[in-house]
Image (tube, rainbow, N blue to C red; front, side):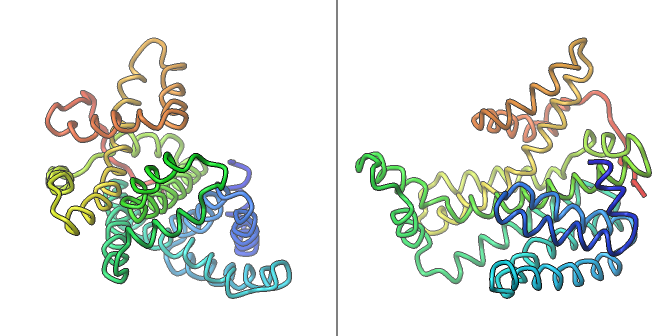
Length: 298
């Protein structure tokens, strides 16, 4: 990973090649999209928004040309990379200028919430729309009763699930870029930033209020609140992960317990609820005894 970051920072051409090629590769292997967006973010974090925009534009042009020759359609490739890169370019500018990782995370979550609100504003009945899509996607061999129950449940949350997945991908790309930047120019800087990740108490209160509204069965308002709540929880999951990382790192078996924490979060999704709860209660219980001052990784 460090060698890739070094290659990206060698100049404009390497950065464009990395971003565009990785973006097209991500059409077959979706996780690669995180690395592609991180390429744009790294340039933006280190050299500024103007340089990042230049790399973004030229790489988008290159991806469009490759899309035309490989896929026979440059419009799809262009739209895909713009959706992939524009949000992380904006968030990278926020992090570069503000130097607070928590603020960048909050704005990324806000973009996700905005996406949910826009989707519910323009879709007459999002639940019914998603239900039709999920019915078409369901395998024909699946038991009818179980499939219908699953579709009924998922259709209520799909807008939030899509928004949450987009925000998580955006933040993972940002974290990877920040880690690259710290590795090349400020060793240890990203660790300090991530472990100090927190949020304003008003954000926590807002999250709790949205969850309460989601549970009140108020029709459309509760439906929107359910989907917004999914997005808001993302920040608390990352905060909870930072808190648990800090706690486990202080233990004797930190070498094993910290990796187990992250592997468990990936393999056992239910653990994310507990991690989010830890993040929600941080301000109240002050779970982190050691406070870290955020530092820029310029």
